[in-house]
Image (cartoon, rainbow, N blue to C red; front, side):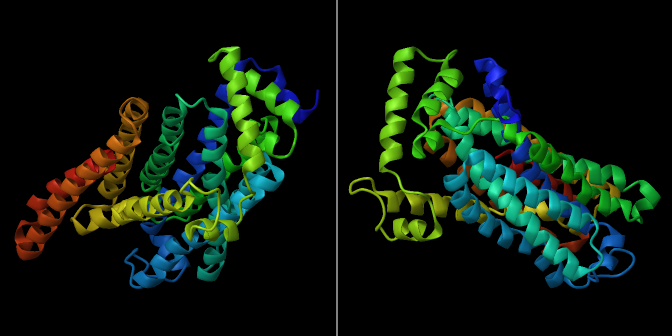
Length: 394
């Protein structure tokens, strides 16, 4: 039995656990890479290495700093489209392997960066890998999960996102004690650590099977049925498995391979069969993602130490509180994973949005109060930190 068919030795339960485990590792990498720049930006040696500030860590070129952080997301956008295109042509597993290779190379390049241009290129490479992993992993999870557990499984997978963010901040907190924070290890090790989950994916992802839907889409119907029987055996009756298999076959025959052009067609109502409202669904997904970013989650994730510095906290407290703020997000994700299949997606989404609205309103009032009464800024600081904790919980 070859390396790529080792999954056939696993029981249905073990196979499902293996798929979930490597999906967790993939999203853990994405979360870690999201949060890592918060700690890196607060490292004085990094600030001087890329030429954005003074030796004491004071950033004087915030535009340059923001460009290094945000160019990663430009690469991620390209990676998402490229990953989707690749996953439909060579399979979900091969797509994840390609994304993992980009992530591994990009992480190593970031850790060895010698100047700003080097770092910018490394961030783009890492972003491409992260985009591919983020785009393909939820597809693999949804295509291997049963309909009544899909929301919960996806919720648990994205716990790894916050786990990755919090690990990045807690490592940053620990490294802040090395040479009082004035060492290359503080930022280079932070960036190098992301290579570990990427290396695990490169080494072992090919041990997993592709999804039944992909196998059916390329005409490998027997393999699709065999795999579906394996992953559903302990959770569904044979009748339910047969029904799902037929649905997969019908869907696979009527679907087109993804590409940026097909996506644009769908957005303008030109793609898909009449009556499916794919354009409306696509715009809903796009605007949900845009509005999720507008809540400020990316800024809070990447700039927690900076926000805390503005509130008057010391370097050590910044990193410690930033770790706590992002760790609390794990609890929020666990709660959503538990209730999403019971209450429904819309109720959970609206509830979370209401919490974020209230928290942002209070946080804005606290910030405005500190501007008008600078002498009371230290009194407002605990309130602002509390809002950051509640923000990530919501």
